[in-house]
Image: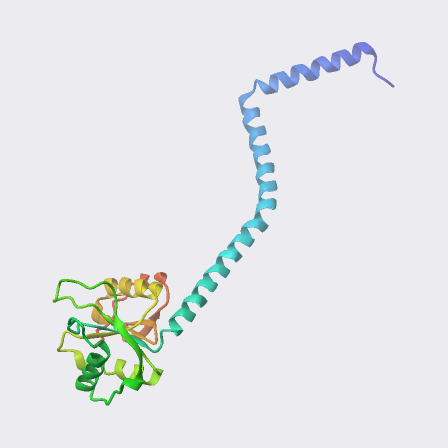
Length: 220
């Protein structure tokens, strides 16, 4: 049975009055707003969740690629060492100095043929007490390792031998030395090491420095 015109008018008035009353009710407005926000949040989550997941995957891939690139860069340096503390002279023969130093302190018979190239690093300084470091690239890993394993023979001298690290690893090495102490940190084939509870551990990223244990002493 259809409504009469008067009934329709009355129903319309009732609906209008009810809506007006509800809109004047702060609690109702708050409840309605919360429900609407919940629906919106659900829909937004459905849309953004896959995007967030993809972004996280891209970040992980980027970290992996960065690490792989750093590994490759370090590998190209596997035959190189950096020598600190060798007196610097004007018009010096760096290669001859290096060979004489190795043969004198390391008890080896190093020849010029064992060195691919070597030179000072950085701009010359007027301070004779701070000679520039020398980078030495050997013709083979065997020669490099022979000298690096003999680095303790320079202990009572001003000469220090270190592996040639990438910028990323050098920053990590410095942070490790700052946290654990210079004498407790060393490198092996570009991998930064320290000792925790008597066990040698590798430090591959900054997060690895958060270990609470204190390392034991290790001779460099």
